[in-house]
Image 1 (cartoon, rainbow, N blue to C red):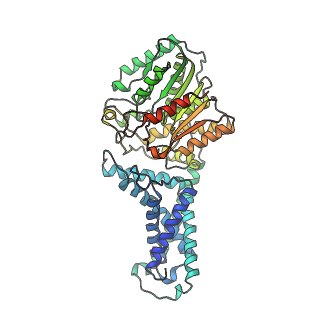
Image 2: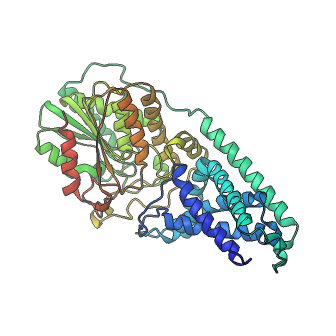
Image 3: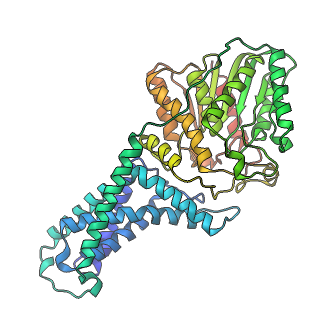
Length: 492
């Protein structure tokens, strides 16, 4: 630590350790799986990236023997924290993601920019302030351990001696803190313009004939669309109203084919099973414009229409869904008293990279950002069988509309009990497409209101994909997933 050359390296190591401690403190999810291939930030990514940024900022601001001050240490921490976000995310996305189908570099960089912006605006302000504090502590440590630092003339580069360096660094640090602070408080405190909660005006329960007629109308409407035959809405019926019917809502970019194997199994058990197609999904030749009119209001209407139809299929109605379908199922749990049971499967309430306390800010940020087509391909983890099925092209604004439905559930769950008392949740500990902590937070709200969901978490070691329902998904293990799901369905 004594030599000028060793001090930036030591400072970098300390900054790396500080970043590893700060990330979980502000709610960022850091993976312990160092060999993951899905772009997760690990503690090693974070330690190396933040350490390198910290060493560079320390060299520029505290590289001179007389330059080690609390102010300069704090400035170095702010700039290191700011720079660490894009560096660490770029490292994870470009070097640690194993792409099945490699998108163009421009699209990959666009995704890095999107994730960097989202995480910076939601967690950047507390993050850089804590890194600034870490920088001051490091400076104080250096001065305490080496009180003779100011007496060593040393040799250094002309750049470090240039008087403009600390002034520019101070200006950038102040600008960063001010900008992130304004964004943090603006997006975090701006009310979300969420769609109104709607439930059926006519609460008269459909009979079986009306339900099948409603499905026939859905079929007629879908016949006019260029849909993949496997992706049309599907109804498996016993030919009459039965004791229990099930509605399965598929996930974002998928289609009813996601759950065809599960539906067949449930049908064999005596259920009437309805698998509705989400708007904008299932086209033979998907384009981004398919999701132009994909709205939260439309999703709520879609949910209500499917549940109204299901009333005519069974005396008791069970609702389940994966990811975005889990969000719609959560809407049913919170607002539809005519539903008897709800099973949420890895529901999507917000991105994996946004902590629970920043859900409101994250929703507002994604709405404010330009509409971006995600560079990840829904088929990158697909078997040849799944690749033959059409999948919608994901966009940020469409994803935000799902988050708006989730926000309605989140906001209502804080103040009112759910309309459904029998709620179960199936989570995947290896899932990085959704934020499980947000689901658990909503479950905790329900518990506070007297409804405690049954929660089953499938282990990380199973390495299940996000789409753990689809038998065509590479890595799917329905021998593990389906029994766990059926056990939850059996909950009284």
